[in-house]
Image (cartoon, rainbow, N blue to C red; front, side):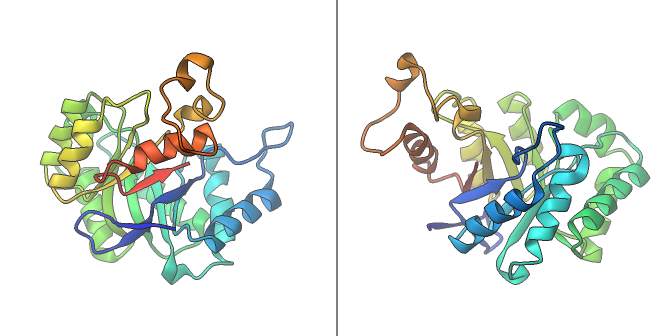
Length: 245
């Protein structure tokens, strides 16, 4: 496994990370817990040290399953990333979402805590209002509940850059793959500013794992599978810390 610096934190993350959005589920869309835990343990045993979830994934069950798997790992050697979807001005609601994640994960702190799917207008109108979520987030950092404040986004790349420039964040999570390079400049900007960069969708939501003939032509050769080629493309960008898949 390769390991890369996460911004200016001094932390080295595995180049491949485990995204916990799509665990295997049964016919009732409930997570297959035992199978999912075995997948997480397999990744850990093969060098993956960053696991990413969110409060809203599977109604919170994604965090619960991850938390159970973490009990079978050395917590000091892994990093947990999760996300808070609340974007309004109520600091209390933001705090309750954080505490819910801590409870479901059954941990005393979260390493990388993302404001989930954040847009610039939401940041301005809700997050940074006086006495709002940003102040609560900074307080949570002082309390040791979160180590690094980050954000994920699907906003316009220029707006992502503006949020980076606020200086409040230590990492970003954006989509990047051979079919979607729209955040390439924002990724470079984040790295220049000392932020870590996690990438979602490196295999295009599965499209690059089983590509059409037309998409196959875009994928460089030399890899055993098209999924491997897609991951190699993302990781060839030195500004990317980790590809989540």
